Image 1 (cartoon, helix red, strand yellow):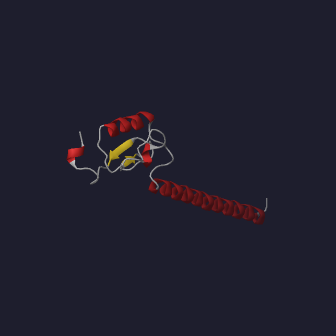
Image 2: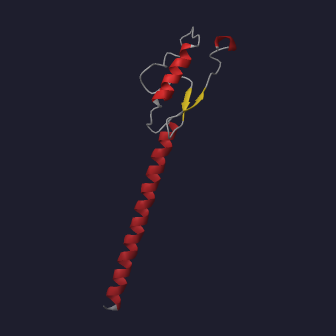
Image 3: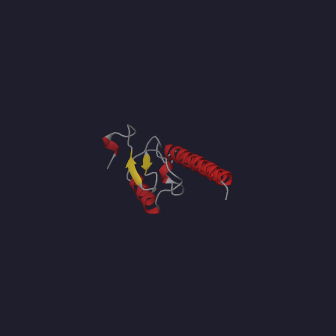
Length: 109
């Protein structure tokens, strides 16, 4: 193989290698962006766990809710979208309940 042919082959491989690195970088960047956007939107599409939804509904039964602030706590649907419920972004487990100033202590049993 001549020196010129060898040089052209090396240049071609070098360009292909650089192009693959650029494509890989943009693929990583797009996945990172999608993940970040999903995390900002509460979770990654993982619904809350069935037993945790049932536990929240049982807990709701023991609360007085005169202003109906817990209307979103229903038997069907994703409890991670319920008022005051914070779920883990990756697992869907209920992580926190934010009582806020919705209730005074006299309403909690």
